[in-house]
Length: 172
Image 1: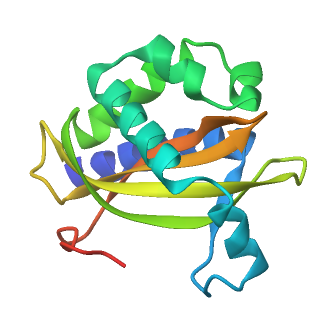
Image 2: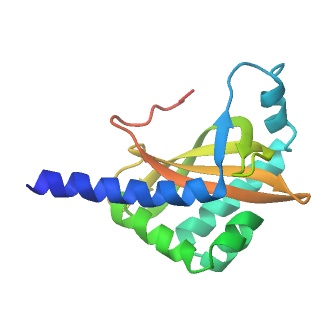
């Protein structure tokens, strides 16, 4: 019975996070090489600036700087959700995965972000191994998707993923 309740809780959390994602867009990552036109979209974003922006976003998640984090989100997210949505989302992540207390950069993916109206934007997704107050480093990953909107870097999404096994030292 307890296992059923735990599984139902996980499903509810995943459904609520999926609802948020469906309202603000989704990412498509490609690994077919730099000659792929969709891959080139992601390459259009300056890697160093996007990486710095992503690191700042991670620090704001850890420090619970909700207003700063909200200001980094895309315009569509800010039009759709009030700033109250950030602490609610972080609370859901914290209750399921634990509060993120430390991260370590692992890898990145490039591709594009597709908005509900079909608009595509170049995207770089940075993946971090995360230590939480519930789990050691490597059980979870924190992912930050960065796009360019009106000549500014914006966070299209951030999410946590649980791995069945520990995150490998150098995931591909």
